[in-house]
Amino acid sequence: MPTSPLYLTDVTLREIELPLRERFIISSGWVENRRILLLELRDESGATAWSECVCGEEPNYSPETVDTARLALRRWLLPRVLGRELEGPEAVRPLLDEGVQGHPMAKAAIEMGIWGLSAEVRSVSLSELVGGTRDRVATGISLGLQPSPAALVEKARQAVEQGYGKVKLKISPEKDIEYVAAVREALGPDRELAVDANAAYTLDDADRLAELDAFGLIMIEQPLAAGDLVRHARLQERLATPVCLDESIVDPPSCEDMLALGSGRIVNIKPGRVGGFLNSREIHDISARAGVPVWCGGMLESGIGRAYNVALASMPNFRLPGDLSPSARYWERDIVAPEWTMSADGFVTVPRDRPGIGVEVDIERVEALTRRSETVAAPGVRVPA
Ligand code: OSB
Ligand code: MG
Picture 1 (tube, protein in one colour):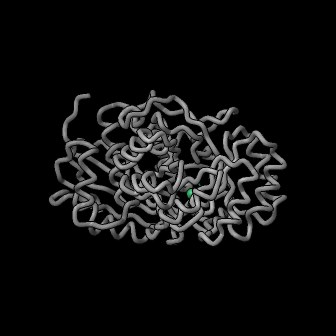
Picture 2: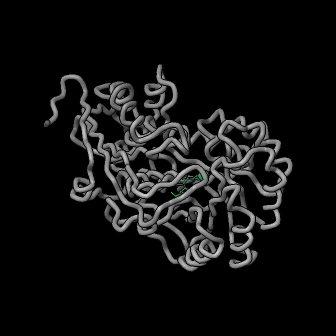
Picture 3: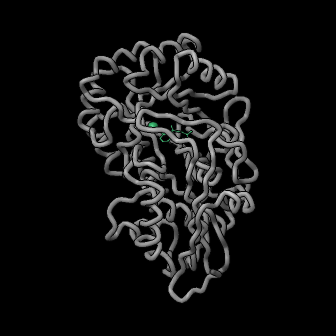
């Protein structure tokens, strides 16, 4: 593929507020109005690409938030890439990591945006640029905590009817066995069912978690705290159900540690959580070599972040359905056209026939939803006020 270096002239940081159709509750918190940080990157040829920072408003899932990411982007991260020769998207990670600890979601928003911009400039699909091979990706749904087992059963039934290939139930120590039992009973033994605890348990709960083995789950996602790789290994020894790690996998070394310790048997890759596409690809490759399947997690992204997830999930070792629900599951109306849809048999199409991220941003709608906006420019570049 012919490549020429990129020079970013300016990046506009916008915060929009996009109301979810319904409150999404997990063991560590909840969200109703999604505050989303969007980046619009521009290069010296005038080409642009949009990307999304996946942080939440509160630091319940990870330490980063919309507010910390905006600060990190403006103050430390954007100045490292603006006006600098970028050989290609693979060159971005070291520039962002040098001298800046942490802030993986803020870093990923830039790094992924440069993948998107490169795809645009080279006139290839993002999927092709990152090494994707699939035309469509299997889709699962992640159901938030519900007020009663009956309410959860109703949601799960609807999901199966809509065609989802996997149903994931959020659990907490207050809402686990009884809820999972009710859903398994209602859906029958053959449905792919998973649970996600978002780090709500400790190793003292091992006996209780082992009770979940009775329900034939395809995985239990992140039962223990993010840093608990050793304790996850102890827990995995006691469970028949495969442990999948989400919050614990923050970069390629943490994935290697999981494999070395036996802390889990499946990896959830969220490109924002691991600092971008290059790290995602490394984690994908490390897992593939170990015979460990990966799948693409979600962070209630708008249609922009979803485009990146779908492109990533078209890589070959994404072997389980991703949390890649269609736009209409989350929003009255998305901010992209076309909106993301799911086929009746539970697949989302990878837009491999379109250059760049494969969807157009609905600027008017973004403007209407914008709560704040600022443009950070390379030295010497003038931007309209
Ligand atoms: O743990 O996977 C998670 C949403 C916010 C924070 C953490 C998680 C989630 C989800 C939603 O499960 C998945 C989706 O975007 O549909
Ligand atoms: Mg999770």
